[in-house]
Length: 103
Image (cartoon, rainbow, N blue to C red; front, side, top):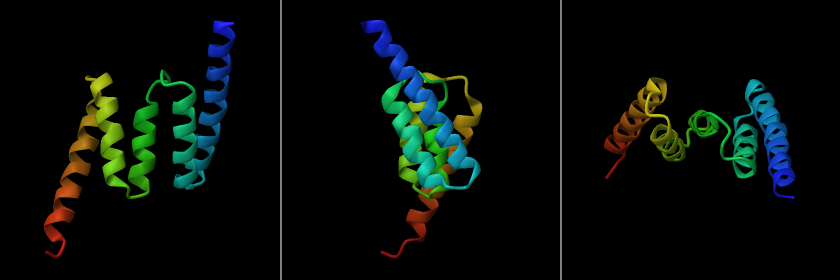
């Protein structure tokens, strides 16, 4: 029924999260991003999932993707000062790179 589907999604998200964190600890950020995204697709209610995905993208130097996920996280977690600080840092880094790029 309806509730078993929810439990399946939660169990799947939990397994995906475990794989994501294992990949993260092994410095395999591309795999971490893949598994965080999979967990997100399975259960969007997992706390800090958007933030973790943003960190994985930041580690991969995919700054625009990181900024997008951080913005989504911050909209849902207005008190998260770490996320706001990281957002500001990444936005400044993107701006600095744009200014340094040849015309």
